[in-house]
Image 1 (spheres, helix red, strand yellow):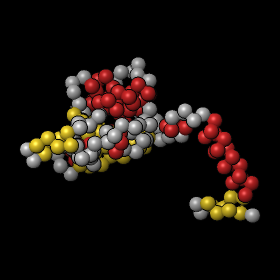
Image 2: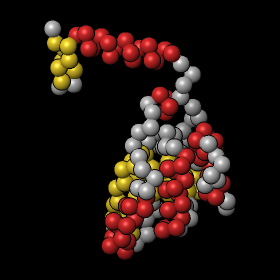
Image 3: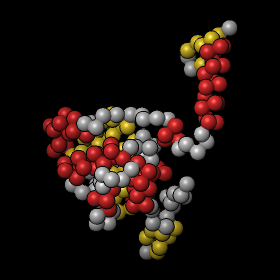
Image 4: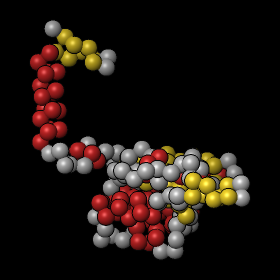
Length: 188
């Protein structure tokens, strides 16, 4: 007997074995973080760069991909200067994120704001992204990006520090008033 799953046919014993392994594996360590459960995956790095960098795209892509386990995509930003925002997903390993931050500082200058992880895919990095409005991010204070690049940080410490530095303001200016931030993400 065959079962259809996602366009492929699997035999019933194979499907039962896969289900048992999945259920046993999920129950074996419930405290394991969701990022660690999925193992090391490819991190998608999307970079929006000014059209003046277009001739350098191959070199830029190669530099950002040096750490491995990355899929780098470069986009031409239609105006002169793209946003100086950086977005790092919650499952991105610290060594990849730090490499991307280092390359970003070297090639495009100091990041000016960090996007809250609640808006991001876990395995995604965005450089120069204007996908998120100002209420979805927080301006960086002097030294914050340098502290994120500390090589002694383990992945959990890096992610905790990123979450701290990208925490949104609870109120935002609007219509001459201080209003509740409509994009405020609740802490998980």
